[in-house]
Structures are given as structure tokens and as C-alpha cells.
Image (cartoon, rainbow, N blue to C red; front, side):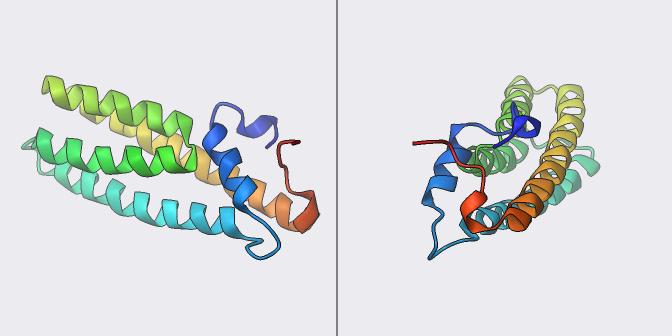
Length: 136
């Protein structure tokens, strides 16, 4: 996986990589593409909910629950950690905490996207047999 990804992705990402084979050579990249498409939709929904100014903590928590679930499924550990914090602020009814943490969620999400784009670019250059997999 490489040092640049340490802390950003956990074991779940490596498990996804192990599902990738000659039949599905782009499996992980396709999963990541779906994740970023889905999470962009959720970020937009949360942005809109926060812009209204009247904090519907249940709705915000529901959106973030979905976001955390999809982040967990791809192994996005830093994003997942921030999602957990956001949900805690929702439970406390802390609007300021939600706003602050959401900025951090977006920052970690953008950083992960950049790192994964670079990772997939390197994997494509290396060819199908050279992708960074955990040794068995």
C-alpha cells in the first residue's frame, strides 16, 4: 500500500485489494470511484443541511452514519474517525462542534481522494501484477 497511505487506509482496503484479480483488474479503483461518488452526494446533503442554519441533528447524524458506513467499507480510517466525532457532536446537540468537525471530514476526504488517485495512477503504470498487495 505504501507509506503515503499509512494512517489513511486500514486493513479493509487491503482486503478489497485481495479481491482484485485478472478477471476484475480494476475492482478496487471501481469501488473507490463509487465511494467518492456516493460520499460527494452525502457531503453535498450535509452542506445543504448545515447552510439552513436550523440544525436537524437527527438528519445530520443519519447522513453521517451513511458516510461513516461507506468510509468503513473502503477502509478510510481518518475519514471514519472524523465521522465518528461528528456523530458525537450531533448526539450532544453541539452545532459548533458539527461545523468544525465537518470541515475536518471534508479535508480528510479530499486528502484521501488525492492520495488514492495517485496510488491508482502508480498501480496502472506498474501493471496488473505489480499492485501493492500484502504478501501472503
